[in-house]
Length: 209
Ligand SMILES: C[S@@+](CC[C@H](N)C(=O)[O-])C[C@H]1O[C@@H](n2cnc3c(N)ncnc32)[C@H](O)[C@@H]1O
Image (cartoon, rainbow, N blue to C red; front, top):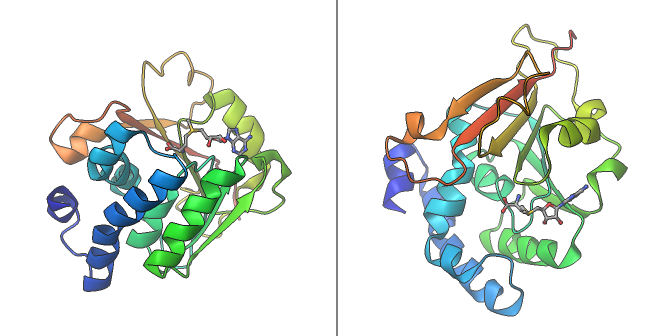
């Protein structure tokens, strides 16, 4: 928790309390439905919460942004981002219902009103979003194929709307066909090099509004 405060020093009391509550909520729910490995539960803040928040170090969402987390599993990266951005709406999607049961319980326990969940494959989603976030779900070509019609056309000139994907490994081969992709290193933002999945890929889909 200290690391979250170190890297996100402007949190409100409500947000600090919500981040603090995460540990107990996940510990309790994980005993009933295993969504996070035991090792990872012990390092929840580092491996899951802070890692998810790495996306917020790449770019900041404007108030009112609509965001989908594809293959959210136990709620990562969408749930920590929903705490960080109470003025944005988050749609957390996964094809495994029991994982979303845990997410729903945590969302209710925290009193988050900006999160909805849907049990489905993302291919079935028929809506558009400013940003699509994800971690460890599919290769980039597969992922882009799933979501490319689901990103909103932008009215501003920023042209940032698109995919923010937490990834590991050597991405040069996987990303060589995506000329607009930027790869960010998490250690650049967090100083310490403690993540296994070390990169955030920002792939803006450059539509004009
Ligand atoms: C390795 S887990 C990652 C979970 C979470 N994003 C994380 O990093 O902790 C991959 C998740 O993606 C989900 N998934 C895979 N393909 C999917 C699809 N087409 N639509 C929705 N969810 C999918 C799986 O059910 C699983 O929960």
